[in-house]
Every structure is written in C-alpha cells, then in structure tokens.
Length: 546
Image (cartoon, rainbow, N blue to C red; front, side, top):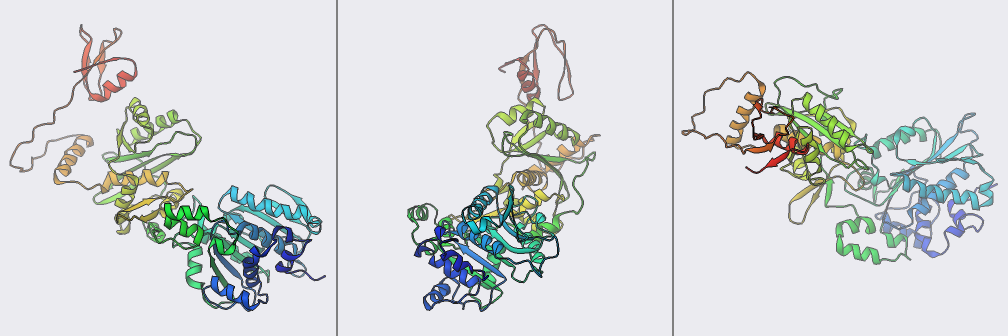
C-alpha cells in the first residue's frame, strides 16, 4: 500500500480534508511541499520564494524546518497534522530494534498550549476511521500506536527527551520557551533532540513560532539560513494574513496603533528591534562560583539583605543577602519560598535568617503598602523601601557583572536563569528599562540585585563613605574612636527623635533595643527608641505624641 504524502492526506476526504478545506490553506500546502521536497507549480514556487527570502525550494527533504509565522496564522492546526501524518505513515521495519518505540515529540512552552495541540491530534485519531484503528491507548500525555510510535505532547523539558529515537520533533512557539533552571532552554532542547534523530533516516525537526527578540534558537536559525539555498535547513517567515488570508485583521490594526513593536512581531512575524537580551550568559557564568550555594555568616562582616515580597498565593517570596569585600560584591545567600505559603510564617523565617547574619533591616519595594513593614517591624526587622526600581537595580548591577572579579554569584540555577532571561527595552525617550519577559519570573534575581547594590554597588558621596566607615566600626564591636578626619569643622551629632509610650501597670522595667535598661516611674510614661515604640504599639501599648 502506498503511503499518502501529507498534501494528499490534506486533500483526501477520508483523511484531513474536513479540517483543511478551501484555498485559504494553499500557502500552508506550499510550505509543506517544501518541507517534504514535493514538486511545485510555478505559482507555488513564486509564493515559496516570497516567504523564504528568495531561495530555491529544497531538492530533497530538509532535516530541519524553522517557521516564523505570525499569530492566528494556523500554526497549531498544521503542527497537529504534521505530527499525526509522521506518526501514522512510519514503518518501523529495519529501523527500530525489537521492543523499541519511536517518538513524535510535540513540545510547547506551557501546559495550556500543549493541551491545545494534543486535542487537535486526538481528534484525528478519533474521527478518522483508518487512524482510529492504529490507536492502542491514550494517556494524559501520550498516544500509543500499533506501529511502534508514541505521540507525546509535553512542555519543553529537554531532560525528558533523552534516550528516545526521535521520528519527528516539533518545537511549538520555540521563541517563548522558558525554563527556570536553564538560561538557554531552547538550545538545550535542540541539543537533546538531535542525537535521537540520528538512527531514523526520515527524522525531521520543525521549529514553529511567532518571532520575539533578536536572540535565541529561532533567531539564530533565521539569521544563518533565511534566504540561503540549503537542503538541510529550511527557514520560512510570513505574516499572519499571508498564511491565513481569511483572518480578521481588526485586532492587528488596533495593536499596531497601541504597541507597534509588539504588533509587528506577533502579526507580521518580524523580530523585535526594541528588545535585546540584558546580558550574555557566558558573562554570567564567569561570575558564578561553581559549587557555592550559600556562605555562612562571618563575625565582623557587614551584610545587606533584600526581599521580594509576595502574598503567598501565586508568586514566590525571596530573600537575598550580600556583602562587600573592598570593591567586590559577594552574594552570600538566596532563599525562595514558592507559593503557596503563609506570608506571616515566611516573615518569621526571614527574620530568623537575618538575625544569624546580624542584619536589622531589609530592603524591598512598595509591594502591598504597609503590610511588609508592619510584619517585619513586629519581628524587630526594619523594612526599608529601595531607593532604586528593579530596572534601575539591574542596570546598576550590569557594569559590575561585566567587570571581571567584581561580582561573585552563587551556583543557583533559578538565579542564573532569571538573570540571563532579563530583557532590555529601548524606550523612545532614550531611557532603557529592564524586566522579565511575559510569563517569566524575576523574584530571585530581583532580591539578589537589590542586595548586591545595597552591599557594594550603591554610589556614595565622600560624606556617606565616612558615615559608613564609623557605622561599621561600631557594629563590628570593640569600638575605639579613631582620629577624626580634618574636615575643618565639627559635625554635630544627629538629633534623634523621641518616642513616648505608656507602660502597662504590670511592667516595672524595660530592656530597650539600644541596650539601656529603664525603670518605670509613677506616671508610667517612658521615652524609647522608634523600633521599641513600634513594637510596643503593635502589642497594644498606648503611644503618645512628643
């Protein structure tokens, strides 16, 4: 029996035709002819050249095809047909060993996208009688066929691919692949798939996605192979309305007014000029101290701590601690509390860690208004608002990371992945901003950046440096007053604001945070430091105006 080509299957009423009716799919038919080296008409050749950079159609089936297509261009429908046809048309005789099963791997950046593709593929094996006979069973992730093929739809985890012979690998939305434990998950997935394709002659890899920024695997393949006559690698680039002529373009036109850079990427399949990778992963790797996951507290060292708060339901809450050695910033600790968690209990745990490092204040943003400050003060830890936005903290950190020996990072994969995943956006005003991509996280690197900036990178005036010098001498213990610098004048001590509380009748003596012991007299009103006033107030004591 002759196996139909994918084009014959798309046009046959007993196969895929009900899903691909009409001339609106002709563009895709031409692209699929190119991926399988089928003959084309002159009109199809002209169309092919218009979306392939002017190159000639491949003379034989390419090993790789990379399709940069705009949104709503029909990608998921075509991906499901490719996977189904590759699996159903495979003959394992002479290729697989006894008991071995080939894999059609459809990877997606998230579970929701993976579910869409799986439902499309399942519909073919349920509604097409000849395909239904091939199905052995279906699980949540795999469709098993009688011809020793498994169709697996999964998120893009390169670790789950290893060890399987790969018949067809489809990297759906590869430009948006994210992995909290990898700085280049698309490249690692690609490298994990290639060895599995080596033993199957007709094996093929298809990367299909809307473009994003000018970095990553899809952009690399486009830059090196678009418009190049190469029978091994085919690259296609086409706007949504070219691949889907019946598309309603009202959403596209509105977004072109609201956000032209984003719209041109999503609808016109153009790589974004306004987004670039914040930092080179190789530069980050040079800052990582291999095997170092945490440094214990050392007596006499002054530490800076920063937190990225969270309400506990969706995002993580993170703590980072760093210190300076000369001009060098050293990251000592990063700790993450993944959601869900109790915010109250997490603040208690953070306070306990801070006390081990002799830290009495943490830095953070304005998250949730007064809540973090109140909870930390109750634990006798001050919550200070960061003087820099997270974008400004990243931009302050960048030159230090680029300077050899200036920064030492921990060997923490989530920290490194989040740092390497940051994006730098060039604004029209000329002021760059840095943030994480849509759908990604930066809670670990945000806390780490604020801690490193606070410990070693915050710019200081000469006066601030002297103040910091005296403060560190005092906190290090065994204070002996050094000779004063020759400023030419005396600096008056800073006047400290007084805080008064009314002490309950059952308390006769107070031990204050500044080390003083105060005996309560008849009127029961005592002046205390601000930290004590806040703590006593939270315990119900009456606070009085000075």
